[in-house]
Length: 287
Image 1 (tube, rainbow, N blue to C red):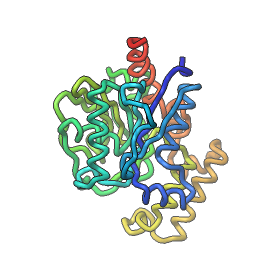
Image 2: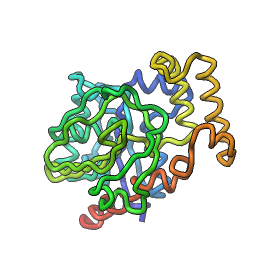
Image 3: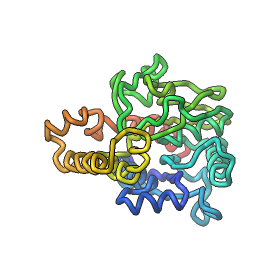
């Protein structure tokens, strides 16, 4: 079925943020999402847009309603900062809600989903959650939600964020959380559209988390995650070694990583379910 689907990926990073990632050998948020969608829906068409860039828009002749799904990456922006880069993305989400196009996304996307529908976010008083979000637990609503079909009730996920959802908008449901972040997943229905979003990152793999850690080394040392640059380099190198050999038992033990993280079929179940349970039904209804 996937050959007929058409997605637009919203890369939430501003140009400076994308350049910082590229300099550290990391893929951009848009690239990560495009690759994941192409793997989960073979043959699909994917357009990547950057609403944070002045003058950026959909491809010539395209309208949001033409797409089967909107997928959002993470971002290094702050959703409660009133800047043109943030306002443009909030309005993009609102337009997608009104167009009725199913939306999905990670991290920044969860915050955009709620703010665009009238909710609120703030800095997490516990600080930065980085590397792995441990023991994410589905709520009662989450256990019955189609996004989590086939997912365990407790699992881990890649994570990197400072902010959190504090107030859900009307017609929003908290689907998951952990001890660090109360809202790890949310489903929002607003103005005829839906947005399923997670605070963690199913689009990452071990290599991409290693590159993100490389890009954030100074910040991780400043926040006390790592004692010095030598430890930061060893952390990155260890992750790259695990990426090269995912069966290495010593490295899996060192980082406390299991199939929740390493197996893409498990890690990306939410995205696959979004395509199956939200994107395809709308597509078939329009046929």
